[in-house]
View 1 (tube, rainbow, N blue to C red):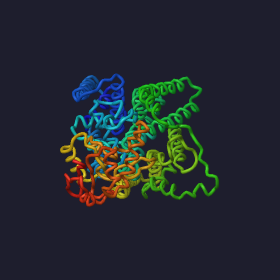
View 2: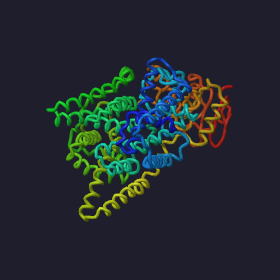
View 3: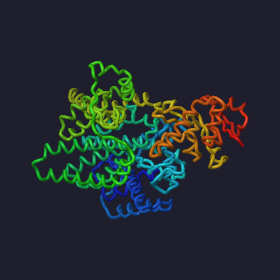
Amino acid sequence: MVLVLILPGICWWVWLGNRDEDPLESLALILGVSISLGAVLALLLYLIKLPISLVGLMSYYLICLGLIAWGVLRKRDIKPGWHWLGAGLFFGGLVAWRMWQARELVLPAWVDSLHHVLIVRKMLEAGGLMETLSPYLPGPFYYHFAFHAFAAQFAALSGIPPAQAVLALGQVLNAAVGLSVYHLGKTLSKDWRIAGLAALLVIFATKMPAYYLSWGRYTLLTGLVLLPLAMAASMRLLAGERRYWLAVIFLTAGTLLAHYFTAVLLALFLLALGGFHLLTTCKTRAGWRDLLRLVSSVLAGLLLALPWLVRVFQNTGMRLAPELNIPESPNGYFGNTDQWRYLWYLLGPESGYVLLGLAVVGLVLAFWRTRWRAFALWSLVLMAFTLPWGLRLGSFRNDHFAIVLCLPLAVLGGLASANLVDLLGRMIKNQLASKVAMAVLALGVIAWGGWLTRDVINDQTVLAREEDLRALAWIEENTPQEARFLVNTTGWGFGVYRGVDGGAWILPITGRWSLAPTIFYPFGAEKDFVRVVNDWGARASKLRGCGADFWALVEEARLSHVYLREGVGNLKAEVLEECEGVEKIYDVDGVSVWQVGE
């Protein structure tokens, strides 16, 4: 994992990195550059129709290693010290915390994880980015893929199965959000205390992004790693630090390829940043040069990602036009209690509510600081989009903004907290007491917030358990590749149906077809195919036994096997026991597999 995560980024840092940054800042940028380079490389190889083998992948990392060695020997300003060890231990602690939060999972949680693993599986088989997920699912592939490319590299080099690679790498990236927030906070404030508090707040005090584990939102998580880095690099480039032009290019491209929503968030920040820059430096030639340098770098990053973005917009109905949602009556602003309750839930727990109050104070302070104003305006816009009413941005709902609000809240909360501690120190005229207060505050965030967020997994989102994992391994070893499985299903929304137990994992893990072929099956597929699969899923969700409806579905969908787990779903094993033409071939720990017909 270390090889995939940092080697390309270290290569960049050795040759182009800023030695004035502290190790945590540099480590965050190293991770971000590694992710972005992996995504851009995957897109380049796709465009030239060149699959990459394990040997080719190893060669890529050997080239990086060679360039690192050459750079270290050639440059005289690289002096690793104990502070780098401290940065590594800090990040290692964050990773350990995130891994502990995922300790009960044997496979990634919830329904998004299913297609993430399937995409990684297909990437490994195709040797990179692909046109389609065939033979698993029909239709063109046009999803944001930076996470999948990164996970496929990790799985290929480590030999870990795709599902375990997704789960482990996802938690590492979840911890890396803390580093990225630190990097952004340090860029804004030049104060490690503000940056450090921001990192601790986003890791320990807020439900998000920790809860992404329960949802399987690994693509958005990757975007949240890259977004703060792209924002910080843009600020530095606009401030005249020319060495960041290449970082802006690759981080912009990486953010665009990581998730469409984070691409929109980056665009909003760049508009705010450029707008404030024009207001303050529009009369100076140097100000225009700096702005032109930033714009050209961002456009270069856009051009790198453009071939894939064109493919995306050709295949989706995504809307970006702003809309205004104003209630017809005054009661409408607060009358929908379910929406407000859900929003409050997303911003929790109690430590998150305290952070929200601190962030309001931080927002006021940020508008008073020239360097912070673009970030403050961006944060205010995100807060406005989070409200259940008001301005809307195309296809993105208010809860989309709510689950990323942890980024600005953590940074603004760090700003407010550090300033309150400084105020305390000035009031009592004791710097030692101020430092002690800062340490107590940091430990308090870890202790209180960590206690409240220690169990982030919603049990209802856990589809597979140990017994399912063993059954899936048995299926992979003992059933033919062309086997087709009936599984218990339930509605997901928009006419789509999902699996309710380990049967949902049959396609991503074993490659065998099932009636719950992940909720990704409507993406890019023909309408007739989607209609048929929706119909099969609906009928499977109503099965109670092996009557005429059961056999009609078996014949129409050409089903050869049935997967059941005790206590889950409408179709029960005890009912199949009495059915002729159905034979139990596996029964361990409440999971059973049945052969139909023969």
